Amino acid sequence: MIRIENLVKTYGKVVALDDVSFDVNKGEILGFLGPNGAGKSTAMNIITGYLAPTSGTVLVDGVDIADKTMEIRRMIGYLPELPPLYGDMTVNEYLNFICDLKSVSAKARKSMLDDITYIVKIGDVRKRLVKNLSKGYRQRVGFAQALVGDPPILILDEPTVGLDPRQVLEFRRIISTLGRNHTIILSTHILQEVTAVCSDVVIINNGKVARQGAISEFTSAGGSEKRMVVTFDGRKPDCEELLKSIPEISSFNFSRIDRNAAVFRIVTSGSTDAARSIFRAAVEKNIPILEMKSVEKSLEEEFVNIISKDTSEGGED
Image 1 (spheres, rainbow, N blue to C red):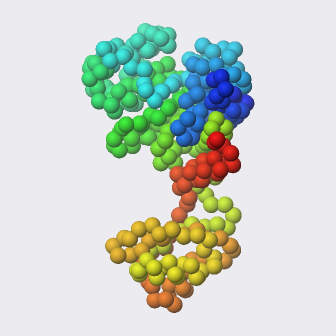
Image 2: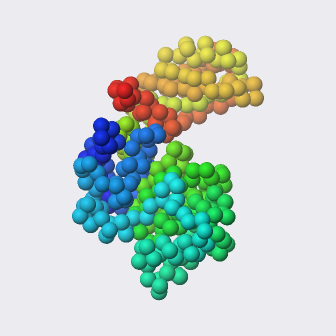
Image 3: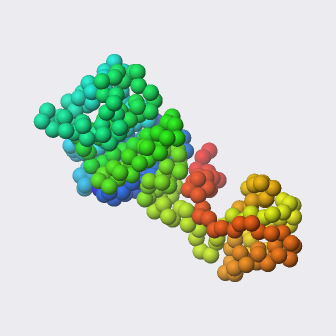
């Protein structure tokens, strides 16, 4: 559906994007990640046609956005980090204004706006001034304007910033629901959000793609490496000595004291059963194991590893 090819954007001597390429398939929810200043917003502004690249192409359904900018803009709903709202309009007035901008016919307008307000749950504030709405409702209204015209592509830049936990969960539900019929690019610093709703991830750093792939590739340990959390009924120093004595353990970190029990996160390597070795060592040292469970890598952990590695290899001056 969307193909980004060798995208470059420079501002004088500053390189905001450096040969960025990735695809977004139809019906996919892509997590678009990176630290502040990585080039995410620049890339999204180019994809939406608001900014021209220095070089490279953006293809939507095989059509170069540079050739048919207005036509492709109609296919894209964009929610920027700061939604383009007009405080002195009521919600109804604002959404009708957006309908005018997107050339939505009067015949289709009422039904469309009724559907959109139901999806984003703003029906009870349609007659209120935008400036009098809470942060959560203003964000919902911004989301609503992105849906006007029923665009097949949605680009969402930090859609849940500043929202409370209940509102965040509601937005995740909305995004997951929309993902059934839309292609979505989601940019966010809340990585749990990406894990919850996205199928694929692209990470950029310093204007370059640092890594991309299915989200399972980021959270599944490769090769024979395994991760686990073990809770011991024992003193922290004794537990650390126990873990140091097991050759299959490549690393471990003390996590916390939980009701007088010591919790450790453990990474193992090799073909042998490290869990069995831990159990045997615990029996020998008379340190009961209260819980032992396998865990996947978190996306947060992998994100930090990728960015740190990229920086250490010369990604930053």
